[in-house]
Image (cartoon, rainbow, N blue to C red; front, side, top):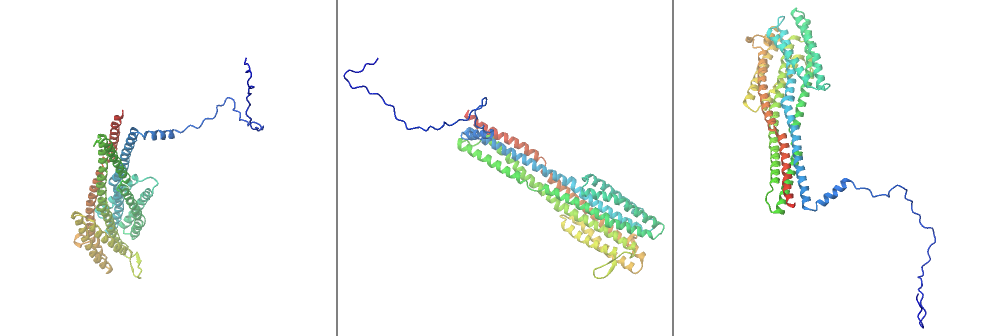
Amino acid sequence: MTQPQQGGAPPVTPTRPVLPPQSTGPAPQQAPVPSGRPAATPPRRTAFAEGVDRLRSAATTEPGRLRIIGAVLAVLVVAFGVVTAWQMTDRSTAADDVLHSSQPLSAGAADIYRSLADANTAASSGFLSGGQEPPATTRRYEQDIQTAAAKLVTAAASTEPGSPAADTVTKLNKLLPEYKGLVERARANNRQGFPVGGAYLRAANEKMQQEMLPAAQDLYTKENQRLRSDYAKATPYPWFALVLGVAALAALGWAQRRHYLRTNRVLNQGLVAATAASAIVLLWLVVGHSVARAGLDSSYEHGVRSLNVLHDARIASLNARGNENLTLVSRGAETKKLPDGRVEDAYDYAFQQDMKTLSAGLDEAESLADDQAGRQPVSAATGNMKVWQQRHTQARAADDDGNYQAALNKIIGAKADQPTGECFDGVDANLAKALAHEENEFEQAAGDGLGAMTGLPEGAAVLAVLGAAAAVLGVGRRLSEYR
């Protein structure tokens, strides 16, 4: 117990501090926490965001940077190889189609046209011979019909059902027996000496000229379009692959320079191997595709273009021969009024137009021929054509003078009569020879182009995998120094 001090001052009692008056309003209410439910937690970050953070953290250290560089190099090299394989596979496939599919089908369509036109010519020649046709003429007609039928079967097998080309083939298959029926009626009446035989033959020729040959020309045009489409797919430069190749080499060069600046080591074996593999693929791509493109361009310029012109010239000669024969068959029954008011025999007028087409085609074919072996048969065909025109003029003069037999002998007579048929056979044989030569030129050039791409897609893929592995190993060896 504390005792007060004696005789001293009284004790001091401590005072409380004076507080300002407080508001007496109600206390704020807090939201009650539901029983059994935990308090809200902040949303969890996505895996992508966490990965970015880890990558950012790793990039601040040299091992992390090396891992990123190795991954980028591997992706670039693999992408280069994959794109190269993809683009060159497409071009190689298109080049193979040019050589083994579209060009043969284009030639087959031209053969269909030629066979039909030649069959029409043989039918008119046989009719002019009288009741008993020469066996050679009959065999030629039958062989042409069989060739056209066989080529139509091949064309039908190579076209997609429902396509325009398939519809054209179906139309020709339907018209062919109708034409044969008209020709047989013309033959039967001709053997019996009935003048109606000539009407049947003119009807057969009309069906051929107005329905069958236009359909065959349409098929030929469609196959040529398909051929040009394959060329367009086979020849463009693979720019995407080239850009990736340059980017991969640039990245590899930068990585090796960085390695040298940080370690003073001149070479990293893995990166050098990756650079060599990428450089080989890029060089192979540039050289291989350039050689392939040159071969394909040559096959088109000196093969396909010449073939197209020669096919057109041969068809013009066949049409001219058929119209020449029909001039004598119709004996003026079919006429044509010209813009200047003159009236001419319709078949003789068509013959003159066909000969103009033939002359222009032979001139162009000779200019396209790139060697003497290609020019020689075209020059010979031109000489045959000129003699043909001279003899035709003599035959027309005899027919206009009323000497039908002399005109007939000048068209289909014996060799001593110097008939136009001899000139036509010369033109046809020389054009066939020129076509065979140009076909060989095309196959050789297109084959060289296709051969230049052989193994490139597979080789690019393999080398790219090896290059990516070498790049990873090279970076991994540098990483081992930090362990």
